[in-house]
Amino acid sequence: MSNMRNTLEKYKGKSTRYTCPKCHGKNELTRYINLETNEYLHDDVGICNNKNKCGYHYPPKQYFADKKANEITPKITAKPAFPMSKRKVEQKFNYYKFENVIQTQSIKKNTFYNAFPHLHGEEFSTVLAAYHVGTYKNNKYLSNAPIFWQIDLNNRVRTGKIIQYDTKTGKRAKGQQNWYHSIKNKENFNLKQVPFGLHLINKFPSRKIAIVESEKTAILMSLAMPNFNWLAVGSCQNLTSTMLQEIKNKDIILFPDASKYDLWKSKIDTLPSSNFYEISDLLQKGATSFEKEEDYDIADYYLNLFD
Image 1 (cartoon, helix red, strand yellow):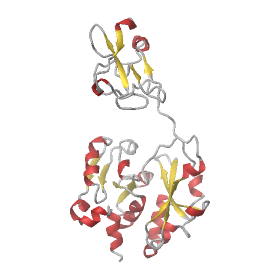
Image 2 (cartoon, helix red, strand yellow):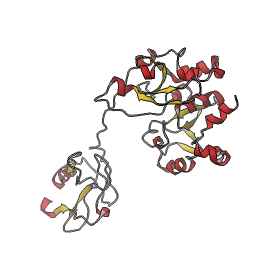
Image 3 (cartoon, rainbow, N blue to C red):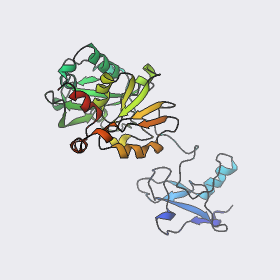
Image 4 (cartoon, rainbow, N blue to C red):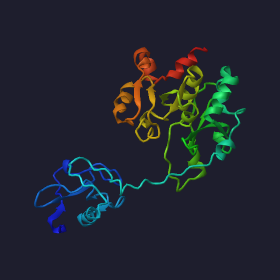
């Protein structure tokens, strides 16, 4: 079929622009249409308007060559485009060897550990060891701060979140946070995050999974309710399909912070479908207006038991 029979669709508003298969920019892809049938070609046949940053272009000529070689299965649809399996090239991500974690395994001066002296004992030390919480020693303002390592199911270390804690309040020290890869590899490091505590699934495969926002909460709730594998996604917006994509065929219960129940509930349908999801409304129903404004999480109530 000649390329002269196909042309780029004229702009008639955002409804005529689609998601780019390469950069995933919304309303960036202009698709080719057949002049005789007025139908779209394959979802991915088009050009990204964000040329300077993306440069994606899959012309009809190449499409028909691929089709003739039986390297694609065409589908005619006006839905937003997604990459074809043949052309979808997953960018390699970087990671560290587990030796990096082992080198940091000392909690005696760790500010997170020392922020909760009332919890000190064999059980607390065991939980910290299970999560492989490290201690950072090479930077003045982060000296002795905990490193919350992100370790995947293959024991590959994706990165570590370094957060300084105030040992008097048990709260984060304002403005004192960084990433291990940002300090050690400032350039050319392709990060693909996983939940904090993901590696525990291999160690305790029969446990139900509980997901919270912060690493602190995951650790403390492992003391309070050790029958769960407590994972943390790091922020309320990080509850995504990409973040959870390594978790398959598991029962998962979400424990959102006091003000995040509606947000996390709205995300459930977008998460990996092989898992079964529940969401706790404990804080949604029980938190006071003040606690919702302060965005209490379930660990705050656990700590209140020691006051």
